[in-house]
Amino acid sequence: MQIPFVDLKEQYQSLKPAIDAAIHQCLDTTSFVGGPLVATFEKAFASYLGVGHCIGCANGTDSLEIIMKALGIGAGDEVIVPACSWISTSETVTAVGAKVVFADILPEYYTIDPADIERKITARTKAIIPVHLYGLPASMPEIVEIANKNGIHVIEDCAQSHGAAVEGKMVGTFGIAASFSFYPGKNLGAYGDAGAMVTNDAQLARTLRMIANHGQEGKHNHQIEGRNSRLDSMQAAILSVKLPHLPEWTAKRQANAAYYEKALGTMVQTPKAPKGYSHVYHVYEIQVPNREEMISKLEQAGIQTAIHYPTPMPFMPAYAHYGHKRSDFPVAAAQMDRILSLPMYPELKPEQIDYVAEQIRKSLKA
Image 1 (cartoon, rainbow, N blue to C red):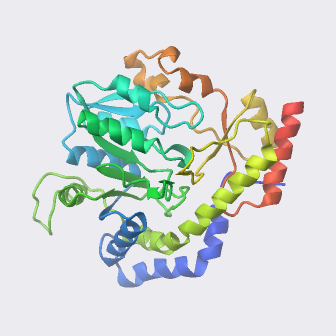
Image 2: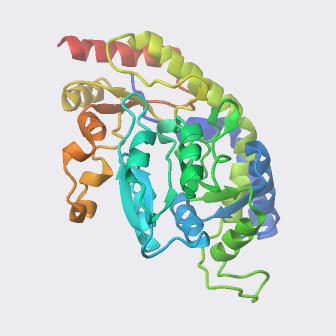
Image 3: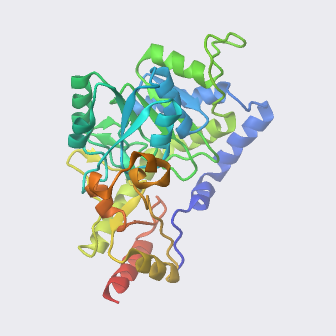
C-alpha cells in the first residue's frame, strides 16, 4: 500500500469544478492582484474567525514581519518565541531589527511554555509570538494574562492552526494581531504562496494594509514607506472556494487523529490536547525510539513520513551566535531526536491508518 504524507490532488479532484471556475473567473475578468476577489475572501475569513479585520498578503512570513513593523517593534526590542517552530517565527523578529529570545516548550503539547516566557521577560520585551504548533493552540489564557501583566503584545502565529480554538474561541483572536499562512499544504491551503493578517484593532488594520501595499492609502497616496506583499486574486478565489469546506475537513482530521490514537495504543507517544482545546491536527506528531530506522522501514512499506522539526531553532547554525546549549531548552532538546510526523489529511482512510499502525508495530518489534 502506498500512503503519501499528504494528498493535495485528491482534495483538488473533490472540488475541481468549483476550483476551475474560480480560476477561470480570474482569467475572464483579468483580475490578478487585489480587487473584489481578494476583498471577498478577506471578509469571509474574518467572519469565519469572528475577527474585525483580515488583510491578505503574499505569505505567512511577510505577515509576521508586517505586524511587528506596524507595532513599532525594532532595534533594541526583544520578542519571545518558542524554541520549536518553523524559522519564519524567529527570522522575522531579526528582520525588523529586534532580538529573538527563545523559550522552551511544554513536554506533552510542543507549544511554548508560559513559565519560561515569564522567566525570559525583560524591560526590553515588546512581544510574545506563541505558535499554535501542529494545529494545537498554545496556552493562550495564561499567555495573554502574562502579556497584560507586563504590558507587552501577543502576536499569534496561526500558520498551522486554521480553525483551532480554546473553549470555543478561535486562535487568531486572542492577541493584538495574528498571522496566517495559506501555503498549499496547510489545513486551508492556496495553490501557491499566500497569507493574511487579522486583528480587531481598526487603526492597526489600516497600518497593516498600507505597509503591505507600498504604504499606499489609495493609488499613489503613499502615507508611509511600505513593501509589496499582496494576496493575488487567483489565490484568494481558490481560498474562497475552500473556506466553506474547512469545518468538514477539520472534523475529518480530528476523526483520523482519534482513529490513530486507538490504532497506535500505547506503542508510541501520540498527540495530546488540554481539556477545552480544539486541536486541528495539521501534523500528527508521535515520538519513537530509533527514529531513522523507523523512517526507513515505513518508507520500505510505502508510507511517507516527515520530521517537524529536526532541530530546535536555538541549536541551528543561524543562531549559533547566541551560544545556546541543550541544557538551556531541556524539553525541546529531549524531543529533537524522537519526533516523527505520520500521514495526516482529511481524505486519509481508516484502512490506511490501520496499515500505518501495523507497520509501526512491526518496526518496534523488530
